[in-house]
Image 1 (cartoon, helix red, strand yellow):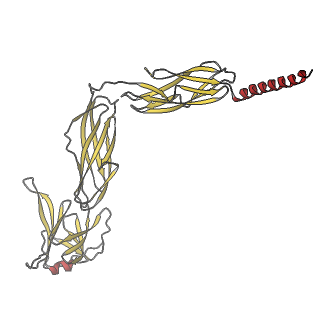
Image 2 (cartoon, one colour; image 1 turned 90 degrees about the vertical axis):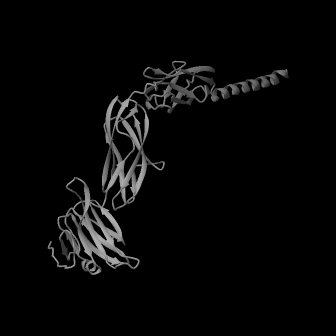
Image 3 (tube, rainbow, N blue to C red; image 1 turned 180 degrees about the vertical axis):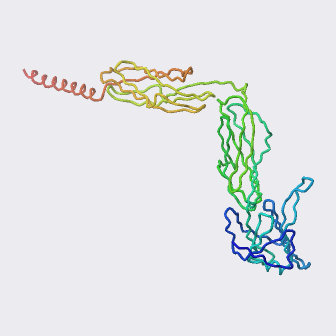
Length: 381
């Protein structure tokens, strides 16, 4: 790609510049953005600043476009040094539509339009000087968390770049934890931050109850076109005031049900973890009132029930067809390791089947009719 060095006598600059008639830069890896500057506005792009001076209120009419670069001086302090200065209305218009390369910098630009105290530029750079983000918190280093503790960590995301950005949120690190991000009370996984704005959000961290005691490192990231990572070292310790209290209970909507001999009934059973410890491998069992009774749970081995949560299962009871009328009792049990629920006794009242009742009634009717006919027949003699 050829670059033409044009002579512009009135062009004053700290660094020499090269001006090209190119319409665009197609160098691989270069970043490109459209920038607009209002009268007397300065914009910071990474280590560079662009400042457009446009006199107003009847002052001397001298337009000026300056470019500065941040450098470290001999004392180790950072300062902005002017690397290009384009003064005068005619000079700026002479550059319109041309690509300007600033020597010994990673910057090039083209003036697209100058009108009504505004200047519109296309800016290229070998580095991404257009986007910049910083994620921060006021939480001190080396904080201490307890096992099974929920912690809210306030965060700020500062978009100091020249572009509006959407940042993906995430955390990485060793340790046993789960997390959620909240913005304005809503759970989020990404957040939009306009150029120059700062957005606040909240990281809710839950330390697992089984987390080993020790030191951990957590990294919180905001990733978009630019990205930043916040490192948060912390330690996990036992909470001596939070003793473990596992408890398992069962509930029935009714302790009494009824059914006919030979029928099947379904009884809902609620298995409740009413303690402050999650329970695993909860086994259910039932004891039938006789050998011909068939009892079956819809789920007799529950993998896990978290603290203060429950699981509903069904107990199907098949009553033997030969079962006599009366009350029977079914024992229901549940256990998780050494934790056992109090046994429940379910009363099942068995009644004769409807067919047996109708047959009995029919026999009675036939006997009555037979007696009436016999009385009429032998009563006439």
